[in-house]
Image (cartoon, rainbow, N blue to C red):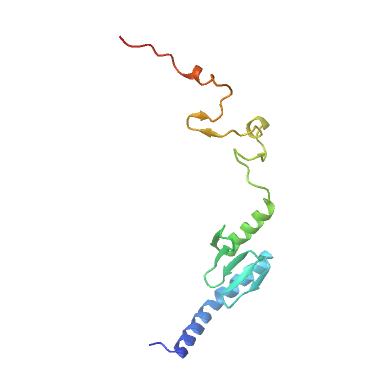
Length: 137
């Protein structure tokens, strides 16, 4: 059975092994100019939104929207989030896609199904799309 002193020794040994990597990752945070608060020996809170494990170089957003490895990818995630505060443009969004002619991306989106538009323009408009079938003799 492992006693309390053995647990403390193992914890201290793990901390000593992780110390050089932790120092390197703290230096990287400073190099990129990211603000952080130390939570414990192995974890820091970066920019108030991301938790970085210094020993494993694993980071994740507190809301679970992003995760990754390396401080450089965390920096890119934060920088990208600051640059792109607008919602992502898509077919059903009202956002304008830069560099695309307005006809393609500013038209109102219609709800569609595999069979076509949900709301036909006139009740008889779908009847004209059907092929004319003559009875076989």
